[in-house]
Length: 62
Ligand code: SF4
Image (cartoon, rainbow, N blue to C red; front, side, top):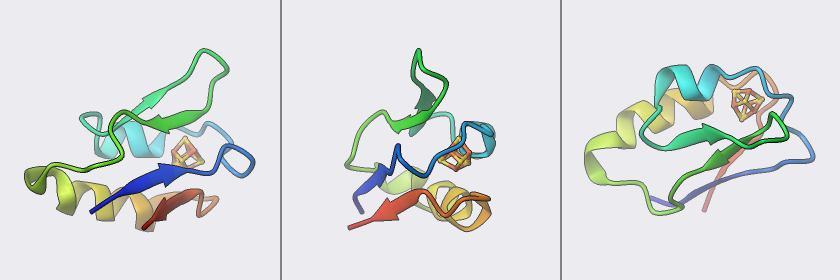
């Protein structure tokens, strides 16, 4: 599973960091980024929850 955050859409709510801090972090600009685009298997469920809960649908999976 690979994910990335569309920084043109992210509004920095931080929901993804709350749900899966192992995969998402905030940049100095206050927007989220994927720490690693390759999500470890054990964090896939939390990452899918973050994708579903992002208010801006800014987390993309490829
Ligand atoms: S939940 Fe969505 S909008 Fe909020 S910081 Fe994460 S990616 Fe950005």
